[in-house]
Amino acid sequence: MRRLPIRPLAGLATIGLLTLTGCGTQAAGPAADAADAGGADRTIRAQQVMRLTKVHEKTGMTLLEGPSFDENGHLLVVDVTAPAGEPKVLRVDVGKKTSREVYSDDRGAYTSAQFSPYDGRVYLTDFSRGDIVSLAPDGGDPRTFFSGEVDGARMNPDDLAFDREGNLYVSDSRGMSEGEAKGRVVRIDREGKQATVLADGLAAPNGISFDPDYRGLWFSELTQNRVSYLLLDGEGNVSSRHTAIRVDGGVAQTDSIAVDAEGNLYQGLHGRPAMAVYDRYGERLATVEVPARAAEGLQSATNVAITPGGTKAYMTVSGPAGGYLYTFDALAEGVRQSNGG
Picture 1 (cartoon, rainbow, N blue to C red):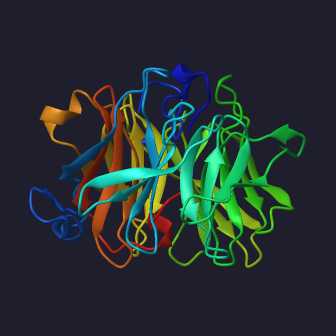
Picture 2 (cartoon, helix red, strand yellow):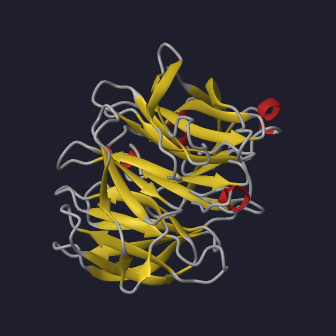
């Protein structure tokens, strides 16, 4: 999703174009109706929760990403383009509609956040430096979990997903700034000692998420508007790979991915404040949109977190109007794969 200088940062979770990442939502009927409508593409209208950030004077942008619920039900959100001295990770109380700084530093451009099932720490991908950083749940004790080259090249890590054992699967958008298909999907063991390339030759891979059974990985390619599926064996190796969904986004591009308990994919869009929802077979079920009156000042809906065990979804939306949280009713309950990354 990104890279610095600021202007190219756009869409980091879909970087590269502009400034982008309590509740309910409705469509032309409840969201559940979308699943019962025989696969018809329905419009779900998201509702504004709050504005989290304004455009930063120093960077000319704000871009919210990586929403992830902590164990207390608060939502962590990263601001990719926040300059030094301003909050780069925020904790949001969605009920009270308040937020506070969790973490900042003078160097990182963090494009995703997710809690590890292995050690409970928060893991952040630093797109600009190529590192993966971890924090204590309260934002303290920052550590560099992984840094350096993978097969002779540094990463531009965008999004990440954890398997059940706590190993990391990272979308590496290497080559994005040059417009070359040098991107990769990289597996890093939970100790941060061994990195393995699972797929390469990719066009700016961005979103990445397991399916509910952890049998395979979905990942999107920003500059090809396609979602592919990696079938894995029991040890994290690739058994097969195929293009699964071609997203008709027009000027919008595929950003981050979340997956609910029924295996539905929520595909964020960079270039339009909306998300496309597909079932596991690639059928378009719904389009989540912000109200038309708000859309003019917003350019991207990068990612979404669905309340674990519930259906309230919180979408990060950004643009010249600022960085916002919007909410809607998801088509199924939230699980780990719809909580961060």
